[in-house]
Image (cartoon, rainbow, N blue to C red; front, side, top):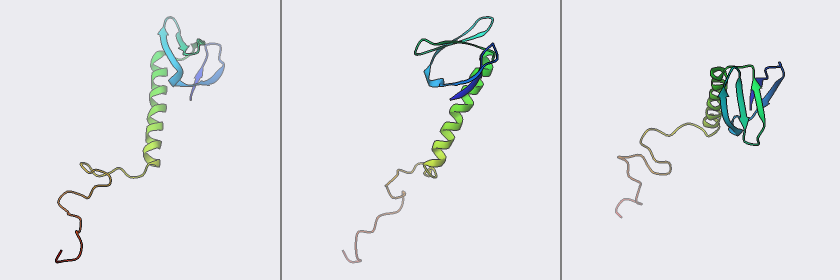
Length: 92
């Protein structure tokens, strides 16, 4: 969710994934997928920055929660290149 301000000064949040389109007339008009229409006090560039920052924060949080990133070129569950798995006791 992102925080926005209507032209009349009302503050509210909206889901950026539900935005169908944005039009820049004398004001910024946001059309939602459900047909709702808002006239914002923010410029298109401000709205775009807010959406970008929100999505970047979500991606960053997901990466932190999923643990450390694997080493470049490695495949999870596969031993690193150059090392073989032991085949058993010596002499097999």
